[in-house]
Amino acid sequence: QVQLVESGGGLVQAGGSLRLSCAASGRTFSRYAMGWFRQAAGKEREFVAAITRLSGNTHYADSVKGRFTISRDNAKNTVYLQMNSLKPEDTAVYYCATPDGLEYLPSRPNEYDYWGQGTQVTVSS
Image 1: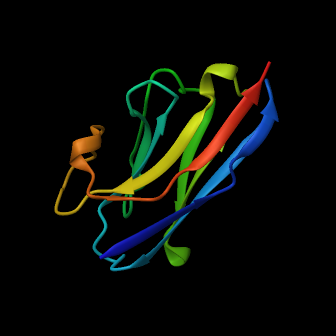
Image 2: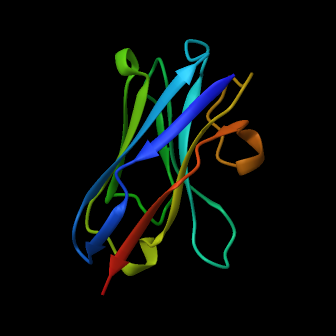
């Protein structure tokens, strides 16, 4: 089993920055990838970014390319999401997640098996 805990959310003005962290515990060595998703009120959960544990290969949603950066510290079993130039439309609950048994970089929610409880990001106008 894998436990994921997000942190770093909060309230920020448009144009500001936040860095989210996701700490993994439990069975972590076998994790192929970690991803970030977000879900705004009344909307579907959407993919944000993902990264592979060993190679550092990344993938981003078009809506965040050039503004968000995903990274990882394998020694700390932690993945980060640096969010710059934040916009009100970035307001959502942000979740980290990891798949089980995959050997590719997934971008669909149903490809991820373990989820954190989420952290709220609110961007004011």
